[in-house]
Picture: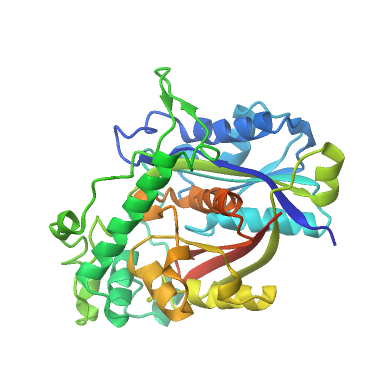
Length: 393
């Protein structure tokens, strides 16, 4: 069986996902096309050689509808012969795209494939695909008669059950900004960020969601983001400690990874930077929702024949601060190895693109530090999680 190797992984900088944000003036098709075009250009690859493009996107509505990945392939100037599809594994969509791409290589279906992701939360707001419609139907209500709940309430439940108080959450959030700011200042993101030329001709190339001056004291003054939501009445233990400051911000961004078989990379003279070592995906309680990363990590470690101590760096998506904190607690992992260049609280969470962002940051961190194994895991709506281990070459 062929190994699937990562030749390159890139992302845009993170733009604030609201009108006036750094990428809000860029159509999402054009944003994804930018990373696709620059990925093949910087690797000297003829795009006609790409067997498939698999893109992740959560809000597949409006400007992100009609198989946005195929539209981005056209917009990037790829030959019409290059196919594309768009997948939705909620927040883990582009991580799942990379897993599908790598598994296709390992199965012999692909030689060269691009895994990508896109989310313009300023132009296709979260939940705009629902627009007041019933997304569940009667049979789900029969199974969960009290109803499913928003992720913010799930985050409150996690904070309460793991006994994380507001100060601990804010300390974690401040540390995310501090690490991201230090990484940006050192140039650590330079290899993974590709510039985006906006319609007015200006270039966007730095994460605008990172706040270097963030302090625990400043975060402590922010109000609860979800207090008063009717779903919270079902959980009297909630402490209402989740705020905009210890959650990931709404974000625009895109990402893309070039994945090949080892033989294809050798034939093309491309340098494999890492190989995919093992994969896992799992479902979990849709009410607690955000803790599937814990069983997913245990599953991927077991499949890979590794322990948490074998992993040199972990990228655990910071959808809300209690999520990676609970993961850290239950896995007895090393806090210094967790999101060493900051996480989504600072760097943003452009839903469908976030898995690719984690992969690009993890890959570069392993290369910069000489680490061998890296693990990324992502909580996902509906109580799911992906976990992936890569091995630096």
